[in-house]
Image 1 (spheres, one colour):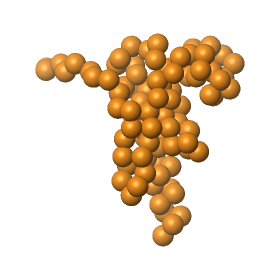
Image 2: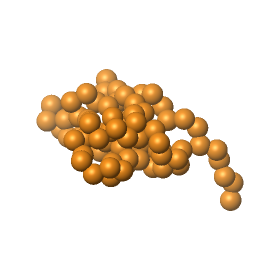
Image 3: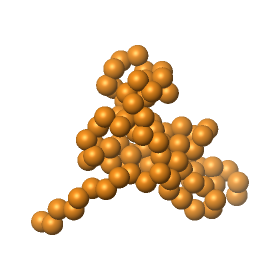
Length: 88
């Protein structure tokens, strides 16, 4: 099996139809503030529908960052699809 080296996360990703999602790496402390999560180390990433931003904990390993990013990107795609259904 060919292993590829994981690069950095993108700073933004276009979902089409004018929707662009920002991607920001944050500290664990910042993540706790963003999510209002009182339990430490519980949130690896989160998706904010209001700001169209995915926040990812920068203390994670590169592979865990990508895993968390893709998980939140799934939520972003779902929310954008729902938004588009409402406009038709």
